[in-house]
Image (cartoon, rainbow, N blue to C red; front, side, top):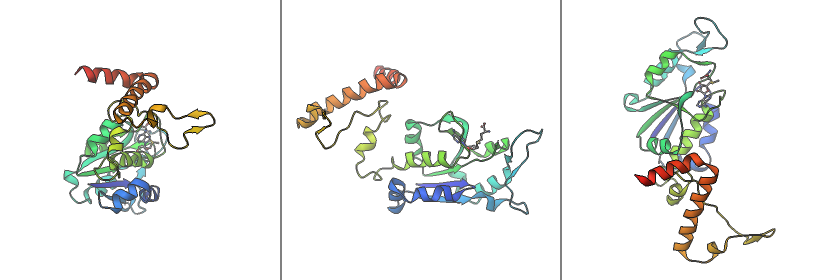
Length: 230
Ligand code: SAM
């Protein structure tokens, strides 16, 4: 898989790629991630990438030409899935992460300033929001998307089963987890987890996942119940 990230702040992205799963995924060749500073593609004398909005108003607007030039400089960009990060996009979730992780090539644009020249949207296939709040720029949002995709590529997690058991992967939140010590300040690990009965443990975990989802996320629980009927 290849991921290209277009940004005005490459130094916000690059350090995050050198740690944990994103480092593992790139280091072992599961994914190639390229970070491009699209300011370099501005045709203006001072390499500006923004301008004031037609019609007036607060803030600056990202200009179309540096973005499109940067996009076209990427090898095979015609065949890549092009994603625009924006709070106006579809809300990101685990199902979308699973779908994106099956793409061969993804290009992600991180916005900045007050917004995009509307014509930029014509060059992208999908608009993604990571939630109903506004960030200063798209870098943190893009990293959230990249991290969630990369850990789903088979082989990236040392134990692929852990991704399958993660919250949301089957429309349920994950069951409660415990590790040593067996008792901490009077709080004990449930006996079932010490029993060695794998089938009983799996049953308990499943029931706990359902119970937890019902209490914490009634919306997800309802979706889970509807999926069961299908
Ligand atoms: N004025 C814009 C609006 O209301 O839609 C918000 C602009 S925001 C300050 C600047 C950039 O940050 C956006 O273009 C986008 O790339 C990114 N961004 C901010 N919040 C985001 C979110 N929730 N999800 C994805 N990207 C976001």
